[in-house]
Image: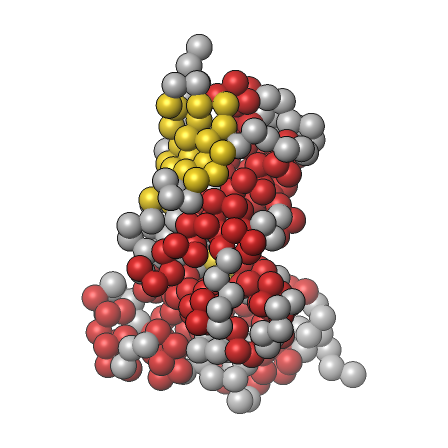
Length: 317
């Protein structure tokens, strides 16, 4: 019976992503003598930000790092791609590992591509007795295209080998932008298959993907940058500069999308306030500071507006 190969759910690389992808690039550059500050130049990110595993970044920020690497002469995409191990992908990586077969793992991967750091969207198809993973790079900026094709092909090959816990007879072609392997491997059982774990991981992936997809496009980019800047400058001007836009243009484009900067700022603050207050580890004053409020009273007033109640945190000693 001919297996059915799925289509990728995500077809656009311009999605918010975890900071881990940038962390891999910075680590690679550091081992070659390039300072982290030079790699991160123009991103608005600090070295400390890379240690925040929950932090999201925009695709534009990761592309800025890629351009810095290329400009510094560190453009070995294959070598960089080999560093993207399953452990760098969090719950997505565990979902692949616990899948039943290679085909099941591919299906999960294509369903949740936007939980990865990929830029070159793959298409998977049968060609005779081979499976061909073909990367479509035409929508990528020309100056980063070759590097990202190399990186993403090598990363896919590395992740596949880790999923099956051993080498695979793959053929990687940068020129064709393809990775090929025998179709008979699709039904190969995976050594760490576990239906219970896989179901849990897939549900967690679905929850995370749903939250990210609900805020796609410009609004999502603005949310990501607001979250990054909350503690020091959660202003429209700062976010607009991070996007390479004027304040007026950002206001106009958000209005065209049916929202505003203040609405998005309130959404980010409200969501983060719930997490911080729910932990019970911080006082109301400390939460207010982390949300970028100069005074706790301003946060308390905002919380009443959002939820109709006064926030409750740890009692200060």
